[in-house]
Image 1 (cartoon, helix red, strand yellow):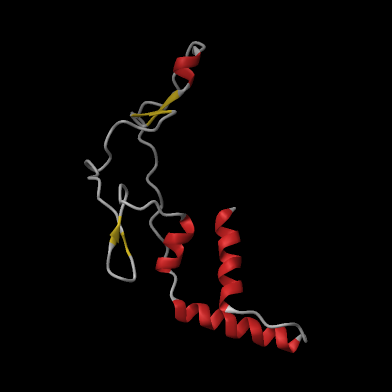
Image 2 (cartoon, helix red, strand yellow; image 1 turned 180 degrees about the vertical axis):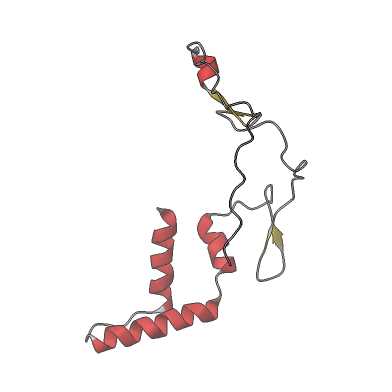
Length: 125
């Protein structure tokens, strides 16, 4: 079944006319734009959309059950967070599958420590 045909424009409807071009803007005005009634600025919008968004305190739970959050006592690196959240049984799978490929190519096998070093290098970039 075909969708209904769009309604024809009414004869008494006013034609849509674009507003005249605005005068040249200075640099302060050039850093903002208005679209559909919302003003966008270089730093973002200042009007809440769909209501205010409450901030939430975030944290990462370590393997020993501690919550690490902004302002925690010990400074932590990206690798520290990765090490806490990365499942170690997955690391074992990575090593086993990598070693299968290396053995089939007659290359030296790797270890969990070497794979962890690789992730450390990748996270440091």
